[in-house]
Each structure stands twice: as structure tokens, then as C-alpha cells.
Image 1 (spheres, rainbow, N blue to C red):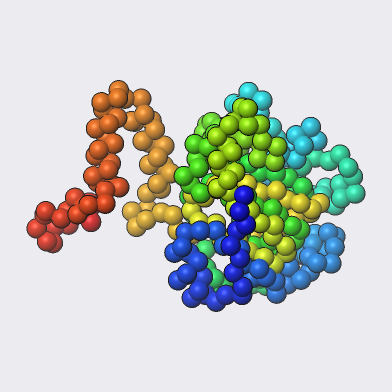
Image 2 (image 1 turned 90 degrees about the horizontal axis):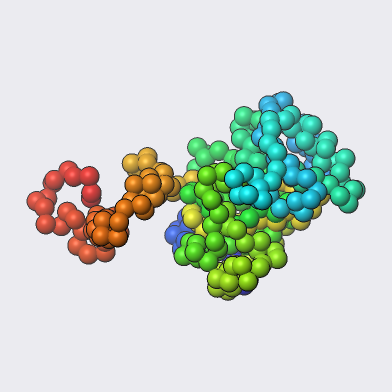
Length: 313
């Protein structure tokens, strides 16, 4: 297990000319340490909730809750056909009240508000807590909850995650470790993408022996309020929220080219269309993909007259 590389205070140019092109995780301490939301959160859990309640306009938010028996781990159901938690659209004020009510209890439901669209639910948050490192068109997304653990999963987009309240431990794995993370079923996956079957906080190496290799390649860090983490596209990441009330705001951008077609959708179509073919056909399609998509030679248009407007450039 390696530490995620830390960067000191940086500017916009450094972020986009050095950190993002490197395609590696980067921990930026105190990037949003001067946000009013962060400054306010250092007071108490109650202060954190009061700040959010002041900005809340009453929009129901997507919330999940797992029973105490789940041990804080959001995961598949035992038969892998569903999930081990309940979902619902709930008023944010109700969620915050429940989190505060459980603040001093030992056996609690694990609660998480996921992917809250800030511009819709807390429209004043962005004005008070501006992010200068991403384009203004990129909307912020908020995550609120108590001590929960999310299994390794990936995002198609680039991700800048900023801790507002509480602490979070991130464990990241490069994309090439996918086989060593033992992805679970795609259908019924908790967040829409497959998650690792391995409980990385208590790994069973008898059941998942290749995880030892993934653990060797992993990078981790604990983020304090005000810290930010850049997560490149397709890097697997597990997240453990460490306090009774935690708030994170993230920004997703990129990951889809000028075509507007999602590479993740293309992957799913490929699995449905190609994976079930016989060996010779799959190898032939492998060769076609290598030539048209992944080839490193002259390129499929190199022999064509200049100015030809073909699908491949």
C-alpha cells in the first residue's frame, strides 16, 4: 500500500498542466480550507447540519440506509441480485435530524445522501463556496452521511473530491487491477457500476487471492476537512467515512470525447455483442479493435488521401 502523492497549495495552471495530465491520484491539502462550509464544519456536527439546513430549499434527496447488521458497509445483497440497503427520496432536513439523533449512539443505521445535485437542492452553496479549479459549467455534487464504507468502484469521469466535514479514507487502485479486484455483477450494482467483491477492510485472501496484488498497487490517504483529492477517470476507489457526520463535495468532468458517446456504454455493448461469440470471431474483433481503436502504428487513415473526412481521424 502506497501513500497518495501530496501537492502543496497549487494554482489553476498547475492543476491542469501537471496534475491532470499525469493521470495519477493527487492529494491537495487545504485546497478548499477557506470555504465557509469548511470553516463552519470545524465547530461541531450540529454546526455542520445547521449550515446545510440554512441553504436547503426543501428538495427531496436520494438517500440510502443500511441496518446495523451491515456493519457500515454498503454492498450487494447476500444473493448478489440486489443491495443490502434501502433507498428513498427524503427531505434533507429529515436526514440531517436522523444523523444528529444517532450521533451519540453505538448501534446505528448507516445513512448516506448520495449524489445530491447542489444547484437544485442547495442553490446558494456554490455562491458561498466557489470552486476555481474546474469549469463553471461543471456542477457540484454533495455526499452526506455517517460512518459508512463504499466498496471499490470506478467513475467514467475525472473527479475532484473535496472534504467539507468529517474525515474520509480513500483507497485507490489503478485501472489495470480490475481482475485483481474481483468485480461483482453489473446488473443490480449498488451505484450503477460494478463494485469489488473484496471487503478491502478485512480481505479474505482464500476467496480472493489475487487481491494481494491489488493491495500492493493501492494508494491511500486520509482527508481532513478542506482537503481535496483528484481521482483520474477509471481509477477504482473505496471510501470510508470516519466520523458520525461527514460531508463531501465533488466535481465530475471529462471522460467522454467529442462524439458524446459514453465509453462505458460502448463497453457494455461490447460485452453483449462480442463476449458470447466463438473464439475465432472474438479474436477477429480483437484485431479490428486493435486496428481502429487501440492501434499504435500509423493509424487507419495514414494511407488515405489527405482531406478525407472519415469517422477515424
